[in-house]
Length: 510
Image 1 (cartoon, one colour):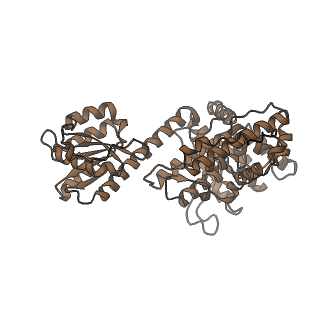
Image 2 (tube, rainbow, N blue to C red):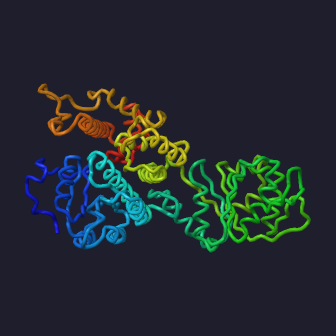
Image 3 (cartoon, rainbow, N blue to C red):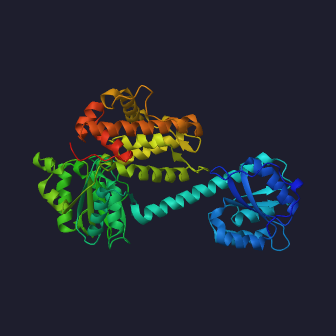
């Protein structure tokens, strides 16, 4: 039953905290009411809100209907109605994301091992002489729970509406790519994927393979641009023992390794012309001859290639064989650069942040500040998704807390936001806005700043200024974006992104 009959003198006189993202909700279970009262007294002032039960059976009933309401469970081991070690697996079965911290007076290794093997996040030894250490242990459990739930929610959202295999995106450009992959997966034709470096060509190739009838077969990838010319024959077609100096054993080659599946040849435009001829022969005849070998081996492989160069221009300049180009380019699939789908940046950044925070074992949930996300959204990303992933990893390494702000991002990324803010603030409002009455300007109205801290008030004021400035600017230029960008002194594409971010829509005039 809930502990409600404890004497008022036993409880902390501090009024209960209003719940917030920094207040941990705890389901505490112990058959001794005085222990629960002590826990309330110790932990309330440290940011924990406890729901206390002396009955483990009742606590399990609450978990069954309200497990999502709690950040962790604090569970005593020795209880007469049901042992905590018996309750533990039942609690984990109800909610596998909910961490359980065991509370025991038995400091033997056997009890600890049993608890950890049963899935406990950690355990505490009675008496609890160090309240701060207890709070740190429980806070770590709460951080872990929220991080796991955020990851689950993100993955659920992405998997349901914005993910296609391992690709992430919701813009029309990516929706079109997803549709093309679905169509290509049903056939067995060769595919040429074209796109800038870092756009995810290998991920697309793998998605085609995973959705095809060859999904149970191997997927083999080779970056042709990374292989020395002297070794590329061996990598592609294999070699026999003694075929050349250093060939101490036979090697099958990637065509043989991919037999029954798909072979992805990245940077196919870097393959030397002599090798292109031998590659064409393999594609035409469906068999491969190892370097130094006398016989051939039949292969059944779907070939997917990719390049960042314009192969049509390469064929015109005789740098790439026209007949091989036609053989590889049965279907051409173009990938958009990240700058062409900037609306995907917030989703991609959040996905990559969760991915690498989990990989690094970060205990607390991490997120980008408003300003940091704005900087990500107006940057052009010449390195595409690969550059974004590198920026996310750097930001995580440079941030110890839960919020990633501008200083954690590379200057090349934050420079656009700084310049945009400087140009916006430097523009003369008199050129755009009508003169204000002598009683003072009507913008910004800062009455609401009394309720906010300096940083939040500054951000909100800047947001309102940007919106009012650009609204007047569009009115003055009759919605002409090019003219508005000239007056404001910022790049046209950056202006369009800011308008989109602020929810302002231009009239379509150039």
